[in-house]
Length: 63
Length: 306
Image (tube, rainbow over all chains, first blue to last red):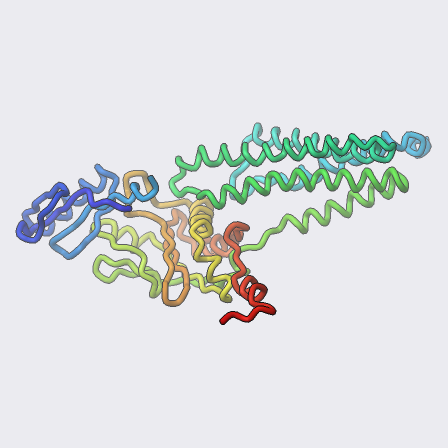
């Protein structure tokens, strides 16, 4: 099963839970942080809505 | 003079002829094509040596059986054991290097290749056996003819089916609806980063594979077959991808409602015709071919369900 390994958002109120969370200043900052986290973790960034991105580890599917 | 020798040394002639044709069969079938394997000299030597052994075994079996030496058949059994080992070897090698591919072959494709390697040795034995048999029973030139005929048969036999036998291939547009990526009308994946969306829009090429009948719907839905398509296309056209860029992923997704297969590839060489040819000529994997219509017909025959 794929795993959510990170959450990036501009709206602090909309998220909560167990995964590491990053708060961005604006949508541009959101893209920047998502880009960095995607490359560092080798996990794909997916858009839930323009202010909320999740970083998903698809590798764990095959393990 | 020579023909006199050939007539008097019939056993020898049949063995040499059989071995030669067995070896020749293996050489003809040893291709190094876009699948790039075995592309290096040592890989070839292994298979040529085994081909020679296969040819010799098939050729020697005939005179020994002919002289009522029936234990020779046990050698054939031994040979089968050896060649099964070839399959394991191929599987082992290919699986070991598959992790290091940007777009892996996948287990089903590897299994297919390994089976072919084993099967071709048996074909070499068969060619050797037949030409040796004809040379011994009739005369040396009928051995030659039998060998030549088997070579042709083997060449015909070698040509497997390709994806165009089960599906029609069409180019389709790659487009985004917000973060959602579509090829034609098939949903592919969600891409978060704007940067990746731009790359996919610029570099991506989309194809839609429409199955020709109900049987082929099952075949192209097979995950192994899909991976084989992605691997082959990526091998032939290159791939715009690197480790650590998880969103730039050539991907194949099924349009569940229609049974069509959407294909997104990120080729280095953006040539429409070449890409189309590459998709069309992907081999059909034995492991993926199913005949549900056949199976249903047989099992319900004479015993109506319900």
